[in-house]
Image 1 (cartoon, rainbow, N blue to C red):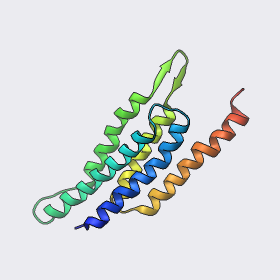
Image 2: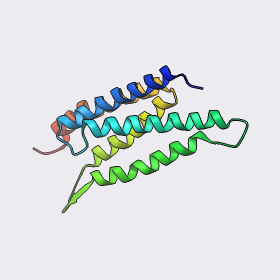
Image 3: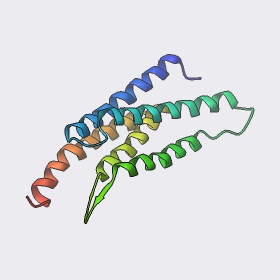
Image 4: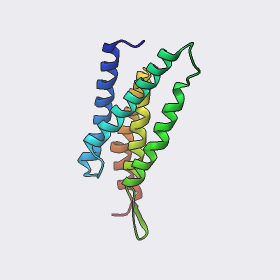
Amino acid sequence: MISTQAVIFRLILSAILGGLIGVEREFRKRAAGLRTHILVCVGSCLIMLTSIYVFDIYKGIAQVDPSRIAAGVITGIGFLGAGAILRSGDSVHGLTTAATLWMMAAIGLAVGCGFYSAAIFTTVLAMVVLLVIWKLEHKYIQPK
């Protein structure tokens, strides 16, 4: 069983990691900003913690696969991401926000199962993509 302190730590860490990406989205004035990213990440973390908890309490009693709930999160988050995507004529807006929401679910799941190094490193990579690569893209690729 995971201790209460570990559960609280994981939920707080997921809120921090979700908040980092959410601040960037908020700064760019995207529809899904700080609160949405935190909630998706913390919610995913809680779902993973619940999955692990259910696995622990039914171990030896019934066949339980904790990865099945995680798979449902990744599928379900696609619906939230789809709501962030808008099409206007030939242009499409919101794909990056939808991708960050999907990533928040994955990061939350990673924190929930205790895979901290991957969650933290993925958050850092996401920040590099959102901040550094965004600047390069707008400087060298997209016309002004």
